[in-house]
Structure formats: structure tokens, C-alpha cells
Image 1 (tube, one colour):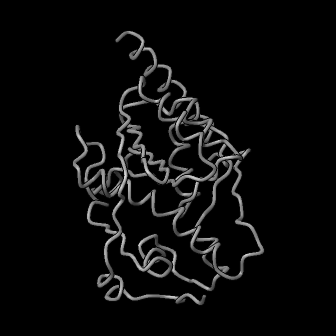
Image 2 (cartoon, helix red, strand yellow):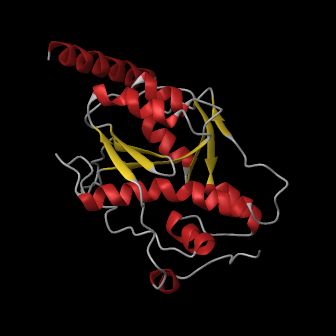
Image 3 (cartoon, helix red, strand yellow):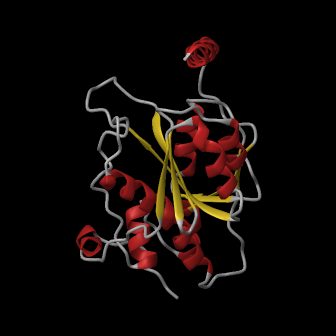
Amino acid sequence: MAFLETIDNDTVAALPAAHFPGRIVVVDKDSDIGAACEDLRRYKMIGFDTETRPSFRAGVSYKVSLLQLSTPDTCYLFRLSRIRLDNRILKVLGSHEILKVGADIMGDIRSLHALRDFKADGFVDLQHEAIRWGIQEKSLRKLSAIVLGERVSKAQRLSNWDAEQLTLQQQEYAATDAWVCPRILNHLMACEPKAEPPHIISCRGVVETLNAPQKRARKRHHRHREHNENKN
């Protein structure tokens, strides 16, 4: 099957919208992390994405707010603005046996590394894979349009991901973004060329972009946060 190399915005806008049809679980308490990760570890392939609160002021930026990990029927939304990047989550992110499929993987991993150092393994980047089928587009929205014939809405992209409560629209948007990624990969892999397996991204020695004083400051921040959490 031959795919389009590119697609214009008007054509994308005319396509039916992709909607995650399953269960959405918001994980915003440490006590909920274990059950979520136990379920995720049952799968060989899951969808992966992150969301960050947008900044509309020069020089102001925010840390990653949300981590989405999706099975075919359940999407877990880990609110990293409310919970720690727990070791149980890191075991999923560091497992070579669980493929985490997303788009612009390294950008997401760098965002997560701003919270905590960890080994990332078992990641598949759709931007890299799509090239094998002659697709030049990079955005998830256009990859979904070309491969699945479905439009991924970006209406909630610039919403406040640090809000006290995520709206239903935010939850559905975040879940769809993660869930659609394995569907795209599976559809590609079912078409020629099939022989070459997907390229696995492994960041065992992750590139650290912080200098020494920044690293010490971040460690102090984590110790202070953990101290306050223990007091509460």
C-alpha cells in the first residue's frame, strides 16, 4: 500500500475525528500508581505521550504536567504536577519488553528527564518509522490522517494542563493522542515493506543537558519536595 508523502491542512480537517473509545483513568494520587503500572506491564505495546502547560510569556516555561500511557482499551493519565515520577512508572518506561510508541519521542523523554533521571528503553518514534513508507510528515495529526484516514484534534493542546481538575475534553484529547500511536505503527507494519522491525530507542546513558550547579539545585528541590510530602 502506498501512502501519501504529505497532506494539506484542508484535507486533514475534512477527515473524521479519531476518538479514544476506552476507559480513561486519571492517576493523581501515589496510591493509584501501582495498579496502573501493573496493568500496563501486561502489554507488549502501549501508546505514549506527554503534555506540558503552555506559556504565553517570554522567558517563562513549565515542567511536563501529564504522562499518557495507553493500552488498547485503557489510558492512564499520570498527573506529574500532582504525583512524583515514581519508580514503578520508571520501570515501565525503562522496560525493553514493553514497546512505548509515540511521536517526537526524544522531546518527551527530555521533558521527563527535567523531573528525574532514568533509563528509557523500548521506545518507538513514529516520525522515524514513517520515513520507511515514504511519509514526510512529522506531526501526529498528519501521520494519523495519512495512515489511518482519521483526524486527531489539537483543540486542547494549549489548554492548562496544570489545572486543578482536567476537563473531560482534556482527558479525551490526551488519551486519544497516546492511543492512536500504536494503531498507526500497527497499520504501517501490516503494509509493505514489512521485513525490517521498528527501530527501538534506548537511552541507557541519557544525555544530560544540565550543568553541575543545575543538577545540585534539582537534587535540593527533590529533597525539599520529598521532605514536605513526608510531613503531610
